[in-house]
Image (tube, rainbow, N blue to C red; front, top):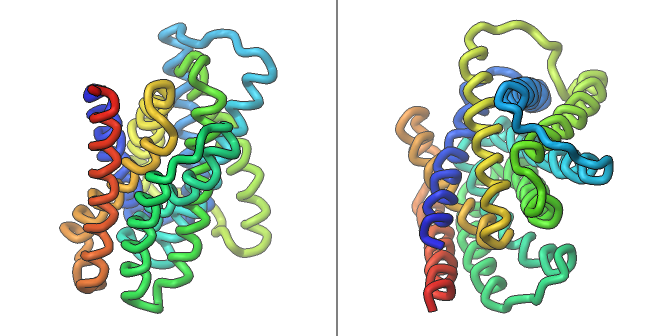
Length: 290
C-alpha cells in the first residue's frame, strides 16, 4: 500500500503544476482546454500505436471511458475559468471540495457503504475552505466556479473507479482523451459565439507550455491515476489530491508573488486541508498493515 500512496503523491505533485500552466498560457479557459486535449489525444494515440499497447474495447467500454474523459474535460474548463477569474491559489484550493462531493456521491454511484469518518475528513476540509473563502470578496466568483470544478473532479474519479479498473489502462487513457477532445470541441464554438471564448490565434510563447501540459501533465498524469484507481478508493485518491493546492500555492507564491494577495485565514485554511489529507492517508496505511 505504501508504494501506491507514494505513486499517488507523485501524481498530486505533477497535478500541482497544472494550475500554473493556466497562468502561463495566455489563451482563455475554453481555448486552453481544447488545445490541451488536442495535444493529449495526439500524444496518446502516437504512444499506443508505436508501442502496440492499444487493445480491443467493445462499444460499451469505449462509450464509458469517453464519458469519463468528458467529465475530466468539464473539470478542466471550470478549473481554468476559476484561475482566470481569481488566481492560481484560489483556483487550486477550491479543488479541496472534491472530497466533500465524493463523500456524498461515491456511496450512491458505487453502491458502497457510507463511512462517517469520511464525512469528518470532508468537514475538516470544508472548515478550511470557509476560512479561505472569507479572506477576500473579489475572488468569490472564482471560488464558486472552483466549486463546480471540484464537483466534476469528484465525478471523474468516481466513474473512473467504476468503469476502468478491469480495463487496459493504456487503451482507457486513449479513449478518455478522445472523449475529452470531443466535449471540448463541442463547447468551444458555442462559447465562441457567445463571446465566452476568444478567437484562436497562434502564439509561439504558448507552444512549449501546451506540449508539456498535454503530454506529461495530462496523459502521463491521468494514466497513473487510472492505474491507481484499481488499488485505492476514489475517496482516498480525491482526498490526497487536496494536497495539489499546497504545491500550486508554493509555486504561485515563488514565481507570481501571490503571497501578497492572501492573509492569515488563508494559511490556516490550507493547514486544515493538509491535516485532513494526513489523517486519511494515515488511516489507509494503518488499515492495510493491520
